[in-house]
Image 1: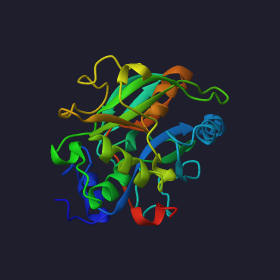
Image 2: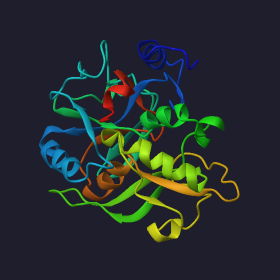
Image 3: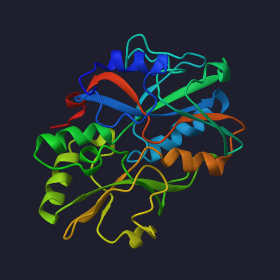
Image 4: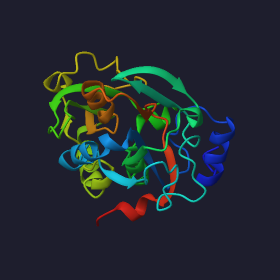
Length: 260
């Protein structure tokens, strides 16, 4: 199914034919994280993203009440084109659904943020194995003790995604990902996970564990699930995010995000 176009995949998601994670789908195209907030919270959240560009790189923002972001995709309905959504009330997840049409309001503003799935493609093209792709599972994601910069009502600690590599391949991965700052850029840590507050590398808070072979280093990237931790702390009365690993697949090519 990886040979689907982004539009075809979005249609399958909209119709309920696809409900799982989107890693490995539509190679070559940008996937995005999502946060939807009431308009009176949007300015604070935008400032949070601007002060924390590695975990929260903004690729698109909707007009209040609009479920379209034309610069990211044609025929887009943000209410139904992501496989799974999390509904938050006062910072607590109260529901997880495949369609948010019934929750939609005219004051909602949608933020689309860069996703690490976009840099997996150049890693693979360079001959590096991306373990969550080869094992056909969601990437492992962890809460850390790395503080984000506070902005308005938003603060919190960073969430990271992890991919294991041999030391030499880790250096190559850093070189490749540095070219893609709008989808998290270079890793934020490699090696000992306890140094960033991760107690058990085999028990990610989000996603699935992957095999880490002997002599491999866990390499950690800032992750677009970070806003969900900030939302838990800021406690807006209502907001919506994607479920981790369940992204919007856009019409934008990954290659267009490279700065080199």
